[in-house]
Amino acid sequence: MVVRELFKKFITEKRLQGLSDDSIMSYRNIIGIFIDYVGADLPLCDLSKDLVDKFILHCLDSHLARNTVVTYIRNAKVFLCWIYENDDLSFNPHKIKKPRAPKKKVQIYSDAEVVRIFNSISTSVEWITLRNKAIVSLMYDSGIRQGEVCRLLRKDLDFERKLFKVIGKGAKERFVPMGNASVSFLQAYLAKCPYKDAQSVFLLRNGQPITRNAIRLFVNRLKHQTGLDISSHKFRHNFATNYCLDNLQSTGSSNVYDLSILMGHESIETTKRYEHFAHELVAVQKHQSHLDSILH
Image 1: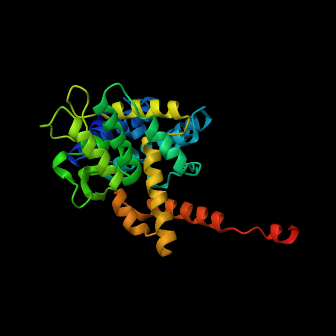
Image 2: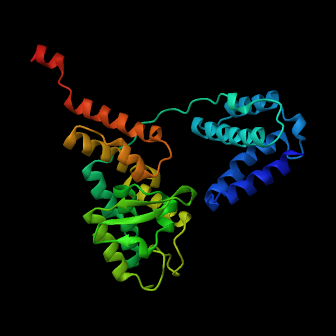
Image 3: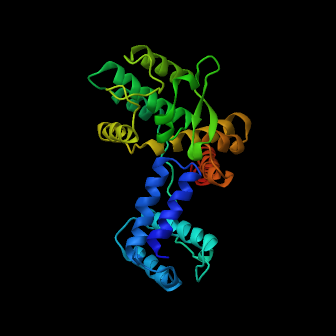
């Protein structure tokens, strides 16, 4: 069997597992880079550890960002591990060591910056402006992903209890809270939206459900308008870090377990990065300069 045929079987299995179209497309695009390198018609018996090492070195020697390189290698490893578990691969890909991605600090927007972001959201159509404010509000204050925004349904909004249900990765459902500001933005948007019978919450101008690309475009415009480093995922990072900060300041605990549930993380280890960063910010805020006490 050749690599191309194995990849088709891999994709079919992932689809049967219920992965989203976005996840499938990501696998096709990123693992496709590895397949292009080794050759789609390469027989499985010729897929060697030496060839995989050459691909890794090729990525490391490229001019790509370190995070991009790590993503390429991680996805190639996912595919190779699947082959190892389902067919006769000559080496154990679980032992492949991928380079570490650089650890970047989460940019936490100040109160003034958050106000600037919302004040900069403006279009020529009132209900579109209200829609965009509601979307940013939910990403910033509820931590939902871009894809989850697109899949949000009106029947899953509960304004009375200030929560809503989202469909996350792997079609997993979870409940997420929303604050008073998000409730106000959502209600104002729904009152002005001309498509009253739509099932989806957020719609395009033609009444179809909003797409990730549409969100990406207006968030990118917002980035240039404000001069701030803005993205959908950075709004999610802000939610997580602020959640830990607020809990540390009010209870002394970051409550990271509850946060992992709210964010839909498979592992709490993914969430702990926000706990660590929140502790770091608190330590900086509480710091009292010993040198100041000596020289003043």
